[in-house]
Image (cartoon, rainbow, N blue to C red; front, side, top):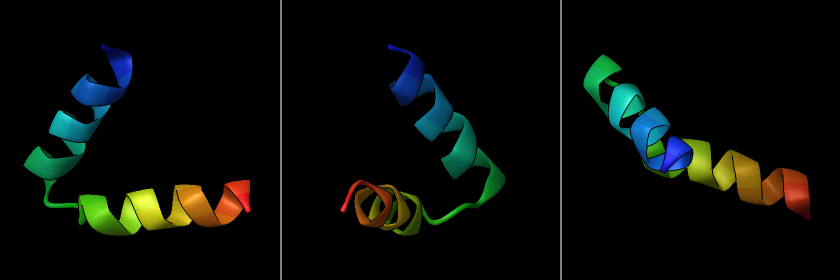
Length: 29
């Protein structure tokens, strides 16, 4: 899955996945 691979790369780079998900949810709202 593309999203899963992106999340894996994001976590490897040290990004806070929870923050990324929060931003995505906020955009949908």
